[in-house]
Image 1 (cartoon, rainbow, N blue to C red):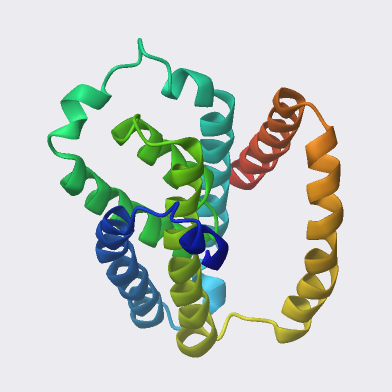
Image 2 (cartoon, one colour; image 1 turned 60 degrees about the vertical axis):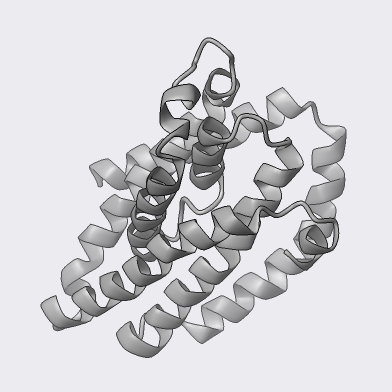
Length: 200
């Protein structure tokens, strides 16, 4: 996010409207889970099914990304008039489902921005999406840690130890793989996992 901010590839006005919807929605979702359910085991299936739904939606966004940006898919002109409201409502949706599933702040958020702001360069879409995803995932994570008590610190540490070095390797591998092949592979994995979580 800092890197994108330095390169001026973040549309801060859009980030603010997304955050105005997503951050309160995330906090409210966390509070509702803590008030409605007495134990985390009671809403485990809700989290699992939400994860499945968001994985499927994210995979479909990746698969049909080309059509989302195609000229013939021209809902942009109609939606542009109400872009701020749509961005705000999209933020609410993302706030709820990112808190429930941890998925969606990336590909799903980017797809909404592509539809509403087709004139923005891809790098600005990515920068704006990241600038919103960082505070949203932080707020959702803190809610799970302090309010719900759902964070396993040993598991979190293990994930960080494995994932942070792997970012470097993954970036190099991704740069050498054909973009279409990489996107299709990721989409198929997410789709398979999503279906599994929905039906389980």
